[in-house]
Length: 180
Image (cartoon, rainbow, N blue to C red):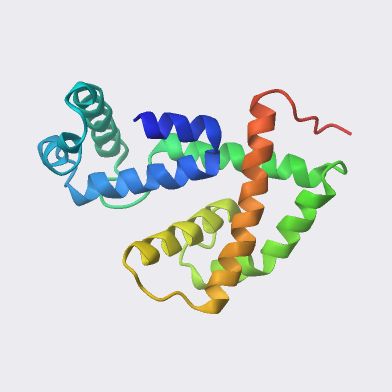
């Protein structure tokens, strides 16, 4: 909970990936708060557990209510993608951010390739990017080999998303001027 809040304030891209991990952790525990207590919550200090239990329980309830206990993402996480997509469009439309445009167009061939391989061709481009990062994160956690081509694609996509996250932070602080 504290980690999620800190990431949300510091780096929206890392926050989203973390929240996708939390969703998968909840799924792995069958959306069962007792299992989550045993496998996750009880590993924390005693004073942190009540707040964590409430947070995980709320997330479990939301996942059940939104029908994402098997797959998919919570609306709160989909909203992050929507907000980032809106900002992405505004940055691309502006003439003030040529480096952002360059980062996007450098990542675009990889995005197109990933979308062609994906069964979710109508999802937002940014979701494709985050899915690629998350997929590689899972492969690394499983200590599986990652091809050189995938590493290169992830570096480019990661750099692009990092720039977007930085602009998101500036926009949130009122420091971003998009209008020409």
